[in-house]
Image (cartoon, rainbow, N blue to C red):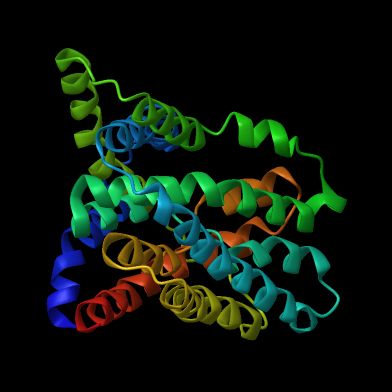
Length: 300
């Protein structure tokens, strides 16, 4: 457990550094907003394309691999629905926080996958992200739909992480080789993406916003950090996954909630403060639970 925590310590240290930098350096919200856009639209798509384009992918294992991730997310959705009575007469609070039971932070996922299995891990996590982002968006928007309008299909088609994944897969299938100059260019972008992504995660942490009944949020935290990875583990075992695919799908299940949950809640008139608190709570909680799952992988 201690050894696993030390493996993840540099990544979590970057998150905490981002949290401190935002509050100590007073760079302004415009700086961090611009940084998040750079990471989301340029650096991470480049990382995904570069890793997937250059990695041998066992497409025979891809179907059960994606199915395991979908089973874990689906379980989180179903269990999240069971928490509805705990929100009483606040349906919008439930609709907003429901997504925190299954959405995932791609930045941390790619960092951890790269730490475990290098480019093969990043490629596997990229495939899973590309497959799961549409499912997560559809479920989240469906729950919030009565209170706002959002072009779901348009959002999915234009999602840069999905575009980077699909482009990398197509290039991989083509059998072509990256020109040396293009490879070096993408490598530089990839090197910058992980560290800046984790700094942005830390900068977005918000420790205030939770008030009143804490039981629903505690339930969501337990689902996201304990139950969903357990479901990923069980599904992966049942479907016979091994090696990089097994490790990646379990760590995918263990990821904290993505900051996109807050953006969606705000765009659709939801409980932004409650969602922001849950995102921060799952991120900080994952600093304790992810080493446990990593240690379990080593023991298994």
